[in-house]
Amino acid sequence: MAVNDTMLKKMVSKYKYRDLTVREILNVTSTYKDLKPVLDAFVFNNGSSQELMSLTGTIPVSYRGNMYNIPVCLWLLDTYPYNPPICFVKPTSTMMIKTGKHVDANGKIYLPYLHEWKHPHSELYGLIQVMIVMFGEEPPVFSRPAVPLQYPPYQATGPPTTSYMPGMPTGVAPYPSGHTNAGGFPGYPYPHSTSYPPTTGTAQHPPYPSAGSGPARDGTITEDTIRVSLISAVSDKLRWRMKEEMDRAQAELDALKRTEEDLKKGHQKLEVMVNQLDQETNEVDKNIEILRKKDDELSVALEKMESQSENNDIDEVVVPTAPLYKQILNLYAEENAIEDTIFYLGEALRRDVIDLEVFLKHVRLLSRKQFQLRALMQKARKTAGLSDLY
Image (tube, rainbow, N blue to C red; front, side, top):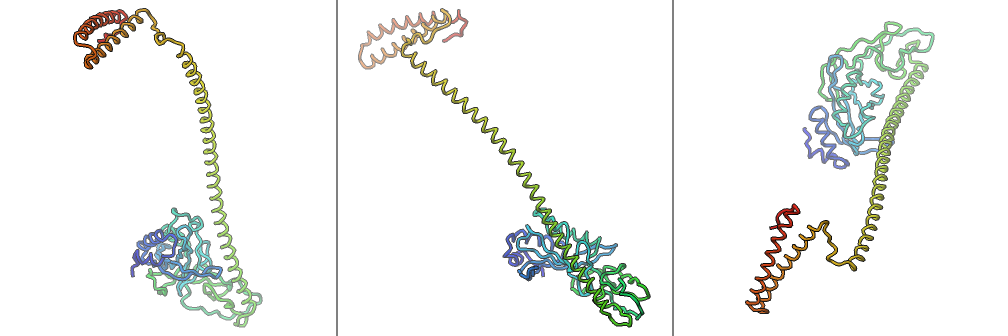
């Protein structure tokens, strides 16, 4: 049954970044059809459990020219995508986990992509592609032997050989031939497994013998064999637990180093900004000091001008540079005075202050004088090299 956007949002309703999670799940399931979203309880190492979303199914991996379906389960925390998913290999009943640098004995997956996870540069689609590449180089599972092999009795004088120690022998193919996928995931044809190498005799051994499976001197299991097998199993378990803790500590150390680098860069930027602010503050202080000096100079100039204006004659304020210019100034002032006089005579006539005969008499005299002033002023301006005023 296809899972749509609405159904996924209901399943991850308690997630902090629901829309981002749904978008990435849809992006993955549209390409890898065998991965299905499942909501189930996840138990942490401290015993607590939480209902989380997982992508469970198979991913196609190419190994030595053949295509295989690797069963995986990707658990998404409620803070996804700002925290990486917890990934496991889920072997079927016909498979066994092949421990390596990327998968431990419990099937947990360790990848640099997960350790360096950083949203938005890291995503589910990219994680699956990295898994396909890594599993193509080192498959995380191999097949169980189809038929348990019998060990012939033999006589030995010393402790059990290392061939009876738990571990995967060389020459075991990733998948058996003729086995069906018991997990229900669609699969690809599996290659034929190679035969297991013999030890000191003609006997052959299965990939992972259980504790005490080696033969004793009389055909029975001895206590030494059981003890050695148990010690080996415990050693492997402790070794992988130690590696898991070291990898986790290394990932945290790398994250702290990146944070330290970011803080150093931020510190440098802050120092540059503080220096710029100091320079701008100094420039503003200098400008304020200049403005204060200019303000004082203006105040002194204004006081001086006010004291001088009380004693100076208005006619002496403007002094021309040459006698000709002084004549032009006086002619211009007199001509404007006649213009104002004619205007006020008209106002007096309008208000019946004077009669028409007096008005015409004075206007005629003033107009004649105004004409003469204008003609003289034009001649003076021409002599001074100035443009015509009228």
